[in-house]
Each structure stands twice: as structure tokens, then as C-alpha cells.
Figure (tube, rainbow, N blue to C red):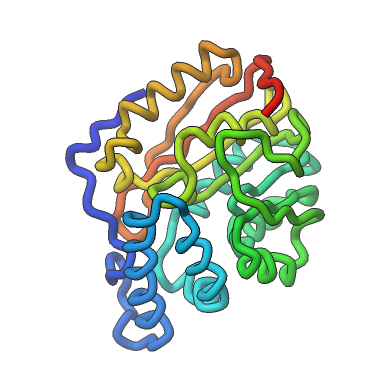
Length: 249
């Protein structure tokens, strides 16, 4: 399915888009200013190193002000996983788990066998304090196999908000899929703001899905409209794992 992104609004990180209490919450105003810095790092640093440094340095502020900032994608990502994965004992990998926002929602849905993976040690520290995951993997993700994660070892993988400029490229979708058992699900969100960048265009995403299907890695792709933050459009993608195999690294 191809979505018309011609009316996508600009990325609103660092603004008060959809936020009504920005004038009364000093910590929120501080957070929004610092998210503007994160926005700059995402668009200017292709290595992702400075983005991780931001999350390590601002993990506590991020965790404290996340709900006030009117993020929505994590709720829709968790809901989609709960809709598709009926077994609440299913083994789930929350990839780019951050401080555990999606994990908490999945716990609320009854999921009890979850692991977390993130590139920021500061964010994983906060996730550990919540006590919702079984294992914690501190590593970056690219197009290669994740050494710490066995192939076809999870019933589902969730990834909220991190398939994005300066975070995870479309090349990492195959990496996430390889961790999923055939017939299982990869569910990730993507802010429409990303589609303005050539390497994140909607055409490239659809081409990526087509290639994954040809290789048998992805059996089906479904899409749900969502919001990322405030009124900023976002999308939830539900991929069902095929029986194709990715060998080696």
C-alpha cells in the first residue's frame, strides 16, 4: 500500500505541536528545546553517534516528559502487536526499546516474556529499573545480523519510533525480520516526516517491502494510519515473517 505523503507536515520535535501545557511545565519546555537539538543531530550526523550521546545524556528527562510531549506512536505500536499476537506468553523483542515505554504498554496487555534492545546504555538503565524485560541487549543495529540475537528466536519484534532519519535505516528491517520466527510479526512505526528525505522516501520503503517479499523474508505487509507526536502523521507497519532465510552476516 502506498500512502500519499504530499501533505505530510514537517517534523515537530522541539515545538509544542499538540501540547497544551507547555507554558506551565518547565521541565517539558526544557525537554522540547533539547529535542530540537536531537532533531539537528538526526539530520546532520549520519553515523548516529551524536544521537546516542543525546539519549545517554537526556535519558531521565526523556523518560519523565515523554507522556507530556504528546507522543502517540508507542500506543499504536503496542496496540497493533496486541491485536496480532494473541498469545500473551509469546516471546517478544522490543527493539530500540529506549526506557521501556512500549514494554510497559505490552505488559498492560498481558505480555510477560519480553526482551529489550537499545543502543543507548542510559535508556536501557531506565528500562531495567522498570523490571518489565527478561534480557537486555546493549548494541547498535544495522543491516548485519545482531550477534546477541539468534535467528528466528522471537514470536514478534516491536520497534516504535526508531525507523527514522538518524536512527534505523530501511536496511535494518531485514535485520529485525531475521529475529522473527516464520509466521511471527515485525511491527514498527515510522513518522511521515521521514518521507521527505531521499533515503527514507515512501517509494524506497515500498521497494524495500517488495524485495523482502521476493526473498521470502516477508509474507505480508499491512499498514495502519497513526500519529507520531501531536498531529504529525505516522504509520504503523505490520509485517508477517515468511520462511526465507538470511544466512551468515
